[in-house]
Image (cartoon, rainbow, N blue to C red):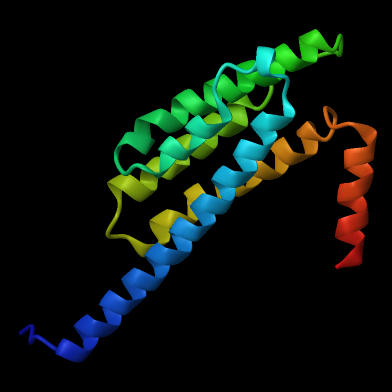
Length: 154
């Protein structure tokens, strides 16, 4: 039969705290990147304030609000393309963002499965990578050069 082992419980608790801290840190870095991306867009083209992305740090609320953020970022990107007279994809980054948001729901509904976090994290990493590549189109040339120069130093 099952016998309680305080050592195993303490180890599992420590692993849960460490993995939760890593997930929170990754989420915060992701939100800072999303904030920077929205700040790059013209204020008149934004459909969401950059600071509102930090509402995604609120547990449970974030499971619904992430879909709103993804849709509004896509609309903001499309507005930016149109205002600059550039050819625009029909719904820039909408499909990728929605896939990442759906994958993230695994974290909420399957909390007790340790590997349930992996699809959501990978989905948002791919979403952020594509957003960063896309946003370089809108950055002034000197900012692009500065980012490249700083990256080359490391």
